[in-house]
Length: 517
Image (cartoon, rainbow, N blue to C red; front, side, top):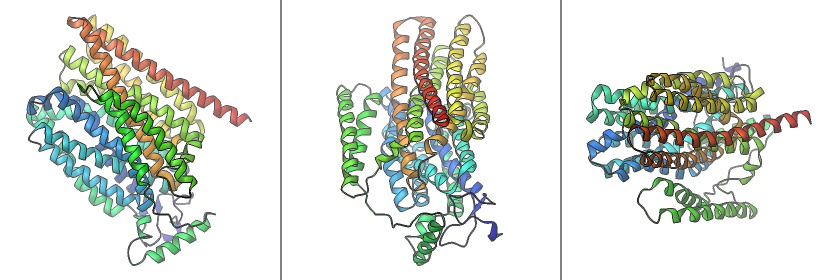
């Protein structure tokens, strides 16, 4: 069996399922590796989408103010956004498997403590820790896939990644709604968090058993010299040359980027803070200062936190830009729908979850469908997916109009399914294209950049579109106000998705022109 095992994780081989790493005689299974990476990813994403459906229950149980309830969402998102890129960099430097386990451990423990919280302050503090754990483990997922998968195998892995993202967005409300429906309001919201603890313990055991800890073996333990020597041999076979990585934390770069992310995200998350919007221009200036510092740091021969040459990779830059606009519009769709159905039509949390269930199922199929086509037709799939998302949102607006005329709200399942196909296909496609030409040694950092863009876009999009929704609702009266509110909100979502579609079409035509040239 050993003869058919790949020694070179970044090269095609006759038995792509199995690999080995320098410093270990064990055989590692790529399928098990992918499983242990994607389960925690799904858990972290569910902690965003599922919470939308239980905020009312949390408010009743904790006697929480509107500001405290907003921080249940915002504290988590802010912690993730701050940590993603530095965590990706640290994983690239010291070992992604160790960073993954550390983040997963923090996430698992803090999930338990969120569920056991005795007041809103404790709950929000633990949510920040939970977000920190998610921010540490998330970029390691993309980095490890980038390192140990190649070609069509990598495309399939990122298809599964996209499947997890799409399903988590849609399945979260169903999960939390079911728990509240089965266990009652008082216990249901707590178990939406506590359930992560037993799953996390099992996941951590599997992580220790199935993760290769490849880079760690070259720098830690009594056999590191042997592991490093074998790694050099592997690099030479790949036509590359081994250079011992410089341990350069770029502390100032980390601080500047963290402050920039806070300055940009916080104004869109805060309520009632008069000074909050003053942070936005400060955040933009800090972001510019970070770019200048990273460029200078590279020029003086140091190792910056982010090599800005990554943005010179066309597929990375275009796919990241498209992803940002996609998340700017997409992530508020179900937030607004839940508000409309629960507050406007008095629909239960469980029923809201059931309405979104077809979205999750269709997303799962679409992610796999797109993964099989992304290497040959990825840019076309991007454009088609976004077009379907636009059609889905417009279809939801049409059905909502018909609901006002007496149509059962269950008919929303039809346009939600169309939206789901677009979401599933674009998720896996964007993930693959953004990482397509990124060197494996920068996989964690690049993944952190993409996900930071997603988090910032999510924060801005949800704040902007829900604000428009409530403004529209307050401007009217009675049931009509709720309908006007969701029309206005979804019109803005459609406009944003059309921008993403325009970028995707330009990217597609650009690729076609390059092929003809």
